[in-house]
Amino acid sequence: MISILARINELSRKQHIIGLSVEEEQEQTALRQDYLKIIRGQLRSTLLSVSVVDADGNDVTPEKLTHEKEINYKDNDGKY
Image 1 (cartoon, helix red, strand yellow):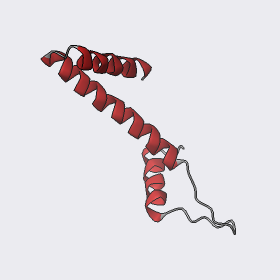
Image 2 (cartoon, one colour; image 1 turned 180 degrees about the vertical axis):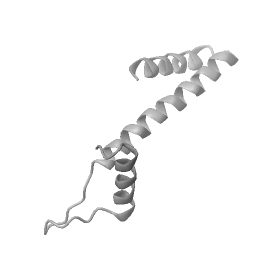
Image 3 (cartoon, one colour; image 1 turned 120 degrees about the horizontal axis):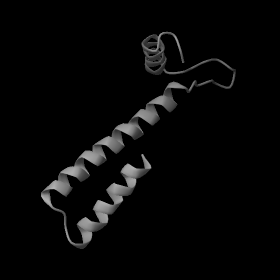
Image 4 (cartoon, one colour; image 1 turned 30 degrees about the vertical axis):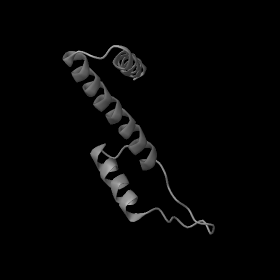
């Protein structure tokens, strides 16, 4: 991921200084999409590991998140 980010930043600097060729613009767009996929995957993974508990110790995790956890659990053959 760091190499993707470094290349995105490199292309961004070049874009502001001298502009990008069509191929570089396409590369920049593809890299940005890949980077967003990685970030979204990390966020999803983090959220799937969260449980919300109220002051009384009751699990009040939103139903949608609980459902996503169940789907993810089944997709991974019962492994978290």
